[in-house]
Picture 1 (cartoon, rainbow, N blue to C red):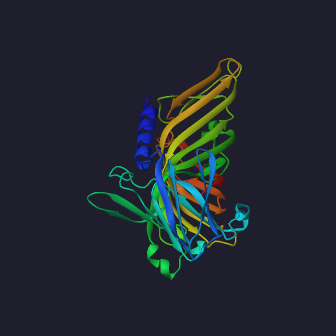
Picture 2 (picture 1 turned 180 degrees about the horizontal axis):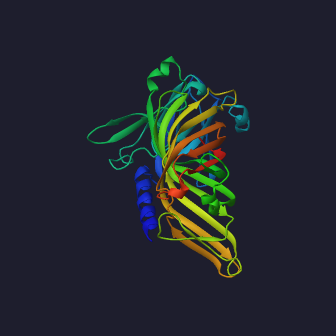
Picture 3 (picture 1 turned 90 degrees about the vertical axis):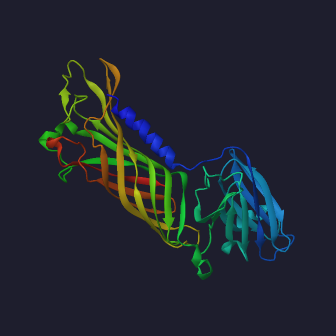
Length: 375
């Protein structure tokens, strides 16, 4: 009866061990460097969000040199704008550069914003043996000494000859992305129509929802990377039949309920999985808007956390039962994502049987497809 609870606790613990350490206290950061040979009235503007508020800072350039100082709780996306007129109103038409700022010493160098290199060096008091970079950016190498650890990152740089030594590079950390939301369809030996043995699984509609919370991988080039991620996935089946699934039995079994006694207006079977996909991703070069076409494919795997049947009837009100219901303990299959910028479509086909240890349901599998947000 408590198998799903144990699985949930173990899975959450596993996921937590995958997440990198994150510092939530205010920590100082320094962003400095040299961009070309610019002088007054030219200014460099830094924009980022902290605690829900947008912060804009400006520094006059002297022979291209600048230095920003501030405090942060954690890594955050930021934008740099080179405004030659020095007027903040001209930001929207200014040359810009996207980067991640975090509690570190950050150095930029380049003749222009479009080809700067960015180097992050963590202060020893922030990076310890227990926690590495909290940035979800991509690391080039890690240098350690007996007194401190530092992490060097290269982001937003061009894949030209001068930067050829920047690949491959590792990346990883906490994230919230690849949010999938779509439809789910059961296949019975490759057909959408269910056999007589599976008529109890007829559904009015079915849906699939999931997302990733952690990722670790390797960028091989500006166009290609591979990574493993971790997250959660739910599959919902709104059943047509007036049935009650039996608990603590194998194979899957059910009881047909007389609608004259109890008639269910809602009968939903939900499966919850810890998903662990292995992904290979290709992206095109940036277009004039800085956006890319992306294609990702790989193997989607998952470990069952729990099964749930939610019922609603006039006679008995709302009911909720938890059991594994002979759902597959481990699911696996290929997936594909195609998108532009951060929006795309996905398809996942789980080749394993939907139910395990259930001979009559052999060949019953799950197909999901829909929209995805984030790559």
